Length: 182
Image (cartoon, rainbow, N blue to C red):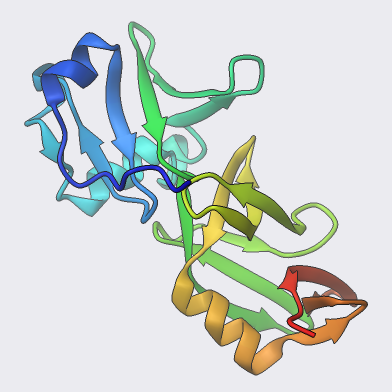
């Protein structure tokens, strides 16, 4: 059963439960505690990008983190750690390109990841969507789901059927997008 979509929040309950931020299945960020900003959706993309760790320079790779031991997301500053609730995965792939024979995927915050042995596309079960869907690790346990537009464009323009799977090729290897309907 698909979890309820996050559209509005009881910010006081989230704050009481220790959740400072939420990331919905579309990659939108919401703040819950008044001391970190006005409760509600974070409208400034640059601020959400900073929180996600997708910034440039000294901020690159800082911000959102995933703890493998607890299975939880958080943002850690030198003085405080903020818990982040994630509806599906924290990032969404919003565009792609081919660099020669290498598929390059881009997140909603402009981070690029080259599909290959270091960053394979894998299928994982999404509680939110109720099915296996493609995902890719962006960095340090932080993963992205293919956005619907990118998924369908890859299927229609670049996918091939192999052994009951619809796959995409990058660097001479095939990576799954899903099961074929045969």
